[in-house]
Length: 198
Image (cartoon, rainbow, N blue to C red; front, side, top):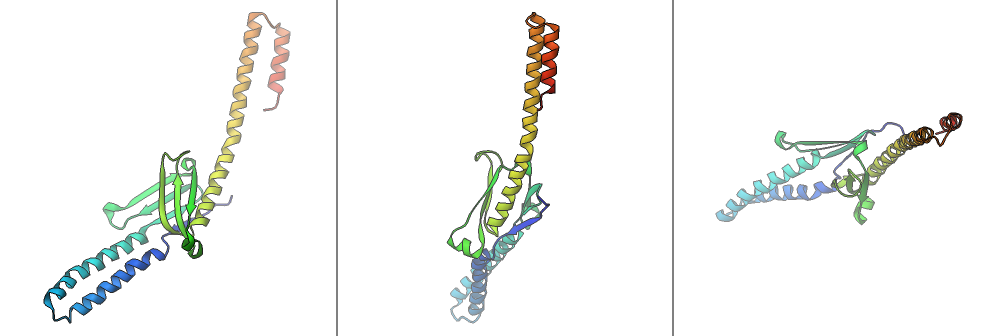
């Protein structure tokens, strides 16, 4: 398969709620500046900026999340502040499979939830919700995983067959040493065994 460089980030739908809360906070702060009721204005002026700032941080955190796959490894990054940045690199040989789910809305707006299993079973799993083009991303990752697994199997088969030939050769040596085979029979069977295709 040709080299690839896939990147998926949070879908725009996750930004809608925090954006609305930021705009509402700013609106209420603006309204509070003209209020005659001082205690209500004070409450709004205290909590309005807190709500606005916390949602700005949420938007920045969403924007920092990225999953990228280059055919050889999966890279997951997140975090905006130096002390909370994370960077997870998973090589393809450590990936078992990728699963994706998307509901009714996700199907039509092209987003979904991706889960990655790192070993057979569910011993080590990581995931992310509301990723853009999740079905496409997960499908490509699975194609590369399957291609990698199929490229590894022939080597295992050859190794197993070489191991079997070694066992058969040792059995012939044991039969010759015990006197069950003559030197000529041993040489003939050994030649036949060594000439057989793997």
